[in-house]
Image (cartoon, one colour):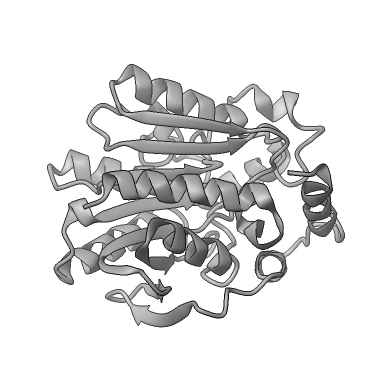
Length: 295
């Protein structure tokens, strides 16, 4: 990896100031996330997951009996199937699975627990299709990583079958914002800063809601019994401590957890895999991890 690649992504992301309005922010993330289109051999198909928007994707060689269920990032307030389509489809290629990307409802119009309800509906939809839990990997970046853990914690508490594994990219695991790297990495992170996270958290889990609840901040959950977990995070992220503390807590609870800290990488860098070698390498690692655990 040459620094010129990640520097070019930084330039793309900082070429315009962050918009103020929610609609404008969503449009901006869709714009930068879809700078590079999906590969020509990808087939995408919209699907109604019992009232929740979804999109199937396949590439030649995908095994239809195995699925990567993916929740996009965006702080629970932005992000979409469109913004993360390149990431999701290439992750499916690496894992040799179908993918199901979910367009869950967004805050502030739909605060907690709307996204959780949609994640659970997507899981139920897959299971009703006859797909075994052991044939499903669940993944997500940033807030999508949070949602991945929340779904698994919900299933575990209900005594239901769990997915084969979980893949977390730059996960936002602590909505109390107690991570030390929110300060120590502030100067090098081009995207995520504490004031912005505070705004997102207020929109998603308004004041009065306990943000230490395990379905809101999975860092504080009892993680024992989770399936194997891969955590990928960049060294230039303010959310670095959210990832490392989650991995430490999972390991202490005897979870099979793999933590990868990618030098110089920024928040959710695999989104820009089309023009970023380390993005492609991260997806290759994720694909190998998923293939090793999914049936």
